[in-house]
Image (cartoon, rainbow, N blue to C red; front, side):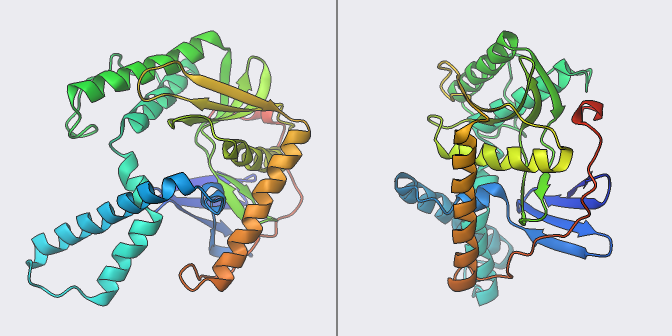
Length: 304
């Protein structure tokens, strides 16, 4: 089911398709359903040689799953229509991360951290149960060792929350930079130890430098919509093996400008690639024109 969010004082409606990980925007009198690229998709233009082989294997898994589904419905000897095969390839290149995310140690620990934050902010009375128990629906094929690792990761997230004063304003709420033509969703926007921050929870091997470029783009979108200056950008990495959580931040100094310029350079490459590469061809990215009116101060915004 798509997730619909009102932003910019209700002048913009965002429709987020979680499975396809796509954003579309409606602005009365301007556009009805305009697609815009996401921050993570744009930063995908940065080369990551170590991930190529792994990503290729994960993409092939998507094609294998689609093939299995097709054969179970139509029989093994049924010819595969070309358009069907093309859709599998598209899913393999665009959506394999989303398919994998539903049943990984990192994703379960990430979701636990999100629900713990919501409970601590008073957004829900349901405190997430700990330790996390095996669930055949949410955690299919999890071994006892995987459940143990999930709990170790979740405990590290709770430890971080216990060590810091964390007050969320926005949790997993889409953001838009209309005049430039991109969007994204931060895990957290609010106060950490009394300072206005954007933060993202990661479950990778380490904190990679491009995370700060992602956070810089999110900071720019927040400041554009709400008119409040963000003080710090936090990258919080929850290890999947239960080792110590990694948390690093950058202040809003010259590094912010450098990180944002790097993101915008990727955006220029993204637009060039979309216009010139036949395998990535699509409609040009179209910015959205909005009046200059801003929302009230962020301190007046409710938790969401």
